[in-house]
Length: 229
Image (cartoon, rainbow, N blue to C red; front, side, top):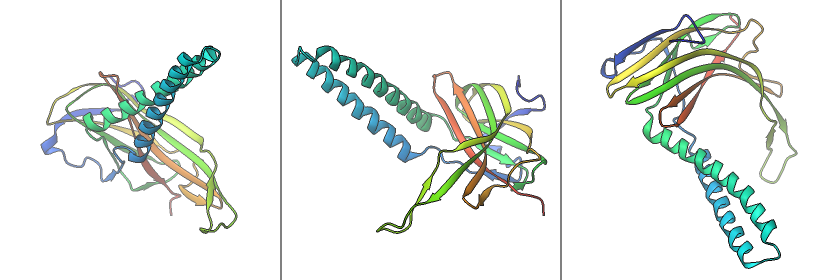
């Protein structure tokens, strides 16, 4: 049952007969390989440091409590990183790629269009939701260095966020694909996608899923917002 959008249409179709429902299919990488590798690296590195602290504490009575306290803090960080890396790896290996289709290649502020989320099986989804998000960041030029001119990116800030899909999932067996079709509306005061001066504005749809294995996934799809010509 849909919770966040009462206009959701849902259906289960055969994966073999899965044809484009809406004209434009947006692409999203299955996972960021560099980020995943980095998470594993730092998680395992902190685990080794934790083990080293425990050994050092056992061999040094004077520093025992300080070293063990440090080991507990570092160990908790290591556990969080390893758990995150494990979730990302399981999602990459076990969860088929989610696809997203929209009606138009670009959409104007104030306009409404339909989008379609497609999730193939096999999978058991406890829930799936989608958010429309606008983020903005500032790029600053740094002084020319030996290797050429470089840029610095300030942290991203969220200008707009809205839940556009929030619904239950269910079992999807091999060969089945469930699709959810719902409308989304771009705010009338939305800024265009792209770069203006030093400001970079990006609109995207984030699809979040949760499975029965306590493994979640998130896919990002870039959406083009442009003033109508």
